[in-house]
Image (cartoon, rainbow, N blue to C red):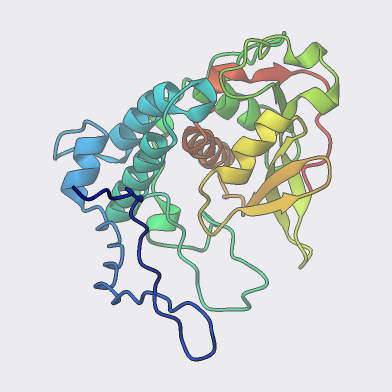
Length: 288
């Protein structure tokens, strides 16, 4: 009977190359990764579905629906960023499709953008205003009040030697609990809306609208809001400013209402409710 000593099996060594190095196992390259497909652009039907609108919705209905949904889905109030971006894209598709709110850029020097709604423009940029939508005979407030479309229009059109009466309003940020107390806060904690007469670089009298945000939350909103060609955005070390000018109309109430609708459209895009702004009765600083 033979006796055998059991030895554990040792794995065979890989063959070495002539240089004494271990040969590396080569793997054949697999198929290339497919290129990511870009999302298809929205059409009108998709935009209507996102904003929950019927096919016959006009520009006013689009703005109301966007404002309503943006209040719920804005990231600052806990909404999803993707959903809010979809709302913005749908809004831009429908407004652009209707030709409303998109200023026409006439030929000229690109460094001097033409102000929308000027008295010598025609087409979508100079849409007709409904003066009957405002009760012009009501008095302007004598104490600080939350802004509304009618209040802004009446205030701008009230007695003054300039094209519009200077207006100043203060807010904290979209949906902030301290919006009503914003006039009592330090300026570096608030945002300011200023409207008033100004002079352009050619010496012509214009109406200037300026929104300045000093606190971080309001600055993020102004940094990300979608703008058309008439607005100018300036980012500073301590504030962000949006500015736009309008050529005044020969009729004071028309100038006031067009300026008001420009403000309402901007705040709708930013999901910043008018009621979150408080009218300041002190003399407004120059809007230039």
